[in-house]
Image (cartoon, rainbow, N blue to C red; front, top):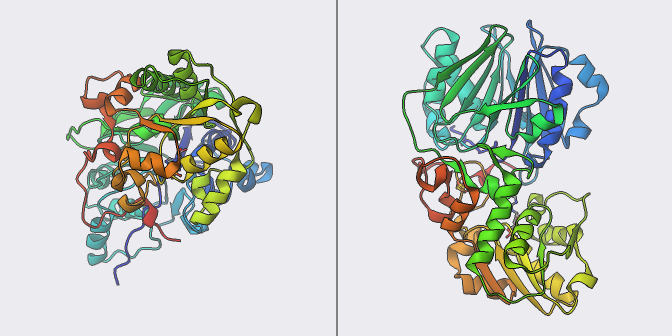
Length: 473
Ligand code: AMP
Ligand code: SF4
C-alpha cells in the first residue's frame, strides 16, 4: 500500500565540514549555533575515509552529544543536522542525517526544506520496486540516487536532484566526498565558509562565527558542490534558471540576528523593518516602544529610532522555555506563552505602549501579550507587526499551518485587531518588507519568496503536496 510522504525537514539547520581532524567537535559547535532552527533532535555523521559513523539522538544538542561520543566519532569530514520539533515527536528514526548502508556505497544525507513533489516521486519509485523505510521525503532523494541509470556517482546525484521540486538545502556525505546542493529558487539559506584549509557549510553564517570560520559566499540557487580531498568543484543541478526566492520569513523570524543571508545582516534587516513600519504609521502617539523578545527586539529598536518614541524593555523572556509554537496542543501553546514572557510593570503601567512583533500566525501569541500588557496596567496597546498578513500556507518547510489556522486568511485586519484585543493593529506592507531587507539583487521582490503573504508561489504546487504540519506524529 502506498504510504504518503510526510514533510519532515521543515525549518531545520544543516552543517557540514570537510578537511579537519576535529570534524565531529566542530559540527557540535556548529549545531549549537543553529539550535534555534530545531530542538527535537540532532545528529552528526562522520567519515574517516573508510566508513561513515553516526552519532545522533532526540533532544537538544547538549543532551544528544557528550565528549566521549564526539571523541569516538573520528574523521576528517562530517555533516550534521538539527531537527525542528513535530507535533507529538517524530522518533529517532527521523533524526538526521539519515544514513543508508549499502554494498554499492553508504550515504548520509541532511536536508532542510520541503519537497513539493515527494509523493509523486515516491509513487513512481515504489512502482519500480523501491521499498521505503521511513515517511521522510529525504529518503526519496536516496532512492532516486540509487536508482539512477546515470554513471558515475556524481551523474547519479545530479540526475536525482534535477527531479526534485520545492525547497532543499542539503548535504550528502559518502566516505570520500561531501555534496552540497540548493534548490533552483534558493528557498532555504545555505552558506559556504572556510576554517583554515577546511571547507564549512551551514544554514546560517552564525555557525561560522562560533567556530571561527570565515564566510566565503552563499551557495547559489541551483548550485551543486562536490568537496573531496582534491578540493571544491562547482557544478549546477541543471541548466534551468528559476526566479530567486529566498524565504522572507528567515529575515522576519527564523534566522538569528547575527547571521547574514545573501550578505544582508538579519538584525539590520529587522531594524529597517521597524523603521519602515514607523514611517507607515507616522504620527502615531505613544509613550514607549517595546519588542516581543527575542525576534522582535531588533525591529522595536528600529521603530523607536524612526518614530522618536523611546524604546523600553517592556517584556522579559524566560530563557529556559522553548519556542511556544512547539507545543502540540492549543491549550499547552497558550500556557507556553505565559511561561515564556513577563511584563515589566514599571515600564508599561499607565503608558500607551507600542508592541512590535514579527508575525501573526494563529493570533494566539499577540492576544496573550496584549492581555498581559493590559493586566500590567498599559493604558493602550498598539500592535505593530513587521510582516504583512499571512494569508497562505507555506509548502517549503515552514510550519505555518493550513489556511484555516492562519487567522489572516479568513479575517480582516480590523477583525484580527478585535480578536487580539489591541487598540490598533498595523502590518508592514509587502513593499515595506522588500525595501527593508534591501537585498543586493534586482529580481522582483529583491529575490524574496513572499508566497505566504501574496499567494504567489515560486514553484508549482502539486495536489498531493504535503504541508509541513501534516507530518507524522
Ligand atoms: P501565533 O500568532 O500565536 O500563531 O504565533 C505567532 C508567533 O509565533 C510569531 O510572533 C513568531 O514569533 C512565531 N512564529 C511565526 N511563525 C512561526 C513558525 N512557522 N514556527 C514557529 N514560530 C513561528
Ligand atoms: Fe518563507 Fe512564506 Fe515562502 Fe514559506 S511561503 S518559504 S514561509 S516566505
